[in-house]
Amino acid sequence: MTNHRVPHPYVGLWVTKDHDIRHELLPNGRYVEARGNREKAYEGRYEVAESHIDYRDDTDFTADGEFVAPNVLHHAGMVLIRQ
Picture (cartoon, rainbow, N blue to C red):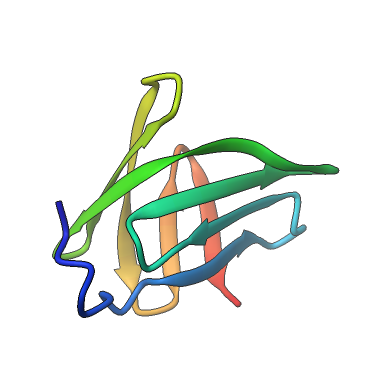
């Protein structure tokens, strides 16, 4: 797991251009994904290693992504921008 005493630079809110998908990366290694009107569509843990992020939701589903720039996250065919 990522050392959470010193948050990595990607902690915060990430959204798609239309704001339909929103990932909040919390400093404690948890995330909340909102989709449309569902504010807590998915929740779980994440780990960051350099520019790679691995997600594991509370149902054990896994996904990943890449931070391709300081404010740009590519995840599951989507582009999320830091807010």
